[in-house]
Length: 140
Image (cartoon, rainbow, N blue to C red):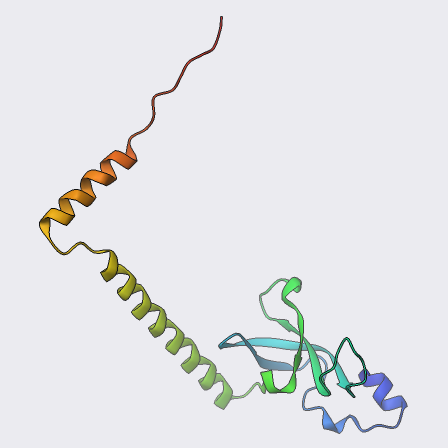
């Protein structure tokens, strides 16, 4: 049921936290992104294609292609305010720290520890980097 349908049926639209065209912060994976509410819907759970009852919002992520637009439930949406912007920044920093730690671990696994291993690795790189000679089978 959309906003208009809810208003026409006499149902109160006050159960929806967000309105169309409102700026919000929305979880997409572990991070929060700025988004705009395009449509709202109050689902009753009777539709087999949309079994989750409650308020849902069709959001467009700012700076993203429209192919990323999606329906989200209220648990993934937050008001656009200073407190939630600070939360967004903290989540982004935590994700960057986690990715740096992961890249350090990956690099240390691939770093040879002895000179013999370093020599063997450099020799194998030389073998891999050589170009194959072309076969010229062009008939004149």
